[in-house]
Amino acid sequence: MKKVVVIAGPTASGKTRLGIELAREFNGEIVSADSMQVYRRMDIGTAKASAGEQNLAPHHMLDVAEPWEDYSVSRYVQEAAACCEDILTRGKLPIIVGGTGLYIDSLLSGRDFAARDDGDEGLRARLGAEYDKSGGEAMLNKLRVFDPERAERLHPSDKRRIVRAIEIFTLTGVTATEHDRRTQVLPPRYDAARIVLNYADRAALYSRIDSRVEEMASAGLFEEVAQLLREGVPPDCTAMQAIGYKEAAAALRGDCATQEAIDLIKQNSRRYAKRQITWFRRWEGALEINWEALPDFAWARRLSTEFLHSRGI
Image (cartoon, rainbow, N blue to C red; front, side, top):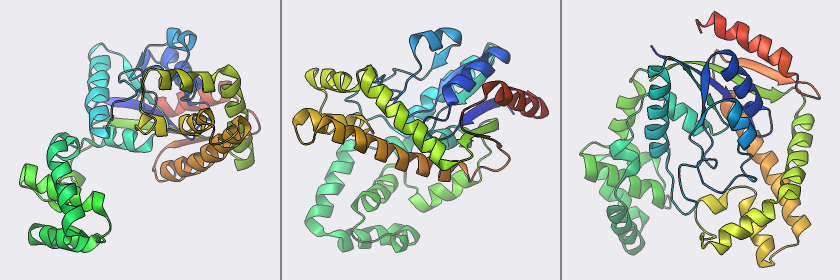
């Protein structure tokens, strides 16, 4: 099976730097796995690798979409898998670096997203309107006819999942329950050696996050958001709901003071980091590197190199 390396962890844990160092050591190229770094001109708030960092090692899956696009996990898997295959074909090592666990797991899993996750926006809109008119219980009864297992798991108020389950069956003739069952037995797409970065002390991570937010604000985060809004990027689009952008936009509208927005970005970033830690904790067989007060990249590089060699890389 084709081998890849994954470097994951919560925000502000040093993934970008370690990824670059390992890429240089193992003849690798970096494939970003960050749901917000895919957007062009969203650089500061997403902590995107700088031009200088990108010059140190080739980077892929950065700046592949406009901020107003509704970028999906299915599109990510399709495009990132193509990047990995190209890297492998050229005899190099794909190093997947990022903190979006869903993107990483979906890329590695070998799932087929084509019919299920892209969907049909027109059909989805019609089913959504039918839900609004008929009510959740009526739509659940409709779902129950062909997918009773999924219907039993859903609450009548869960409009999104009810509509999605009906849409999947309408488009493919396969129920959402059966689709999930089939994908669970698919072999993984890659043999992944996973490295997870974190801090031994949660307070140290939170302090680093707070410092990073201050650095972003000083580097021009609010100006970056203002420019996106001047370009006509809708404030309610997916990209502008990202942590840092939503709060900055609120401050620019006058809904809160700048410092209030900064404090809220810190709080929301800490909460997101906690969810990331929970996600990556489920990974079995990963090399866990837990920093003390400050990251020691020389030590992390040695540990990672030994681990990767043990995995045949």
